[in-house]
Image (cartoon, rainbow, N blue to C red):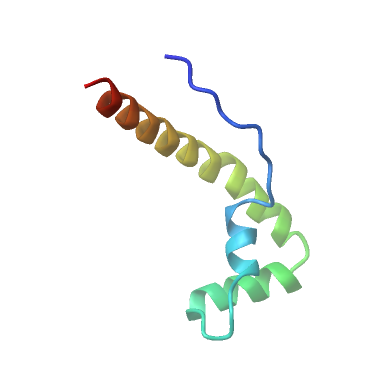
Length: 75
């Protein structure tokens, strides 16, 4: 089964989630936002986590969703 994966490359999951965090966000999210803004190399580390952990998990989820849609459409 060939599944087309759209070629997108954004800032990643962690960076995007932290960028949208407001002052009423949970303490962990605010701490992560502070770390990414103030610690040198933290953004690079976050992108590495996104690339090697987040992207494969996201791909696995996408494939499962698309297979479910295909199964329901063909039944």
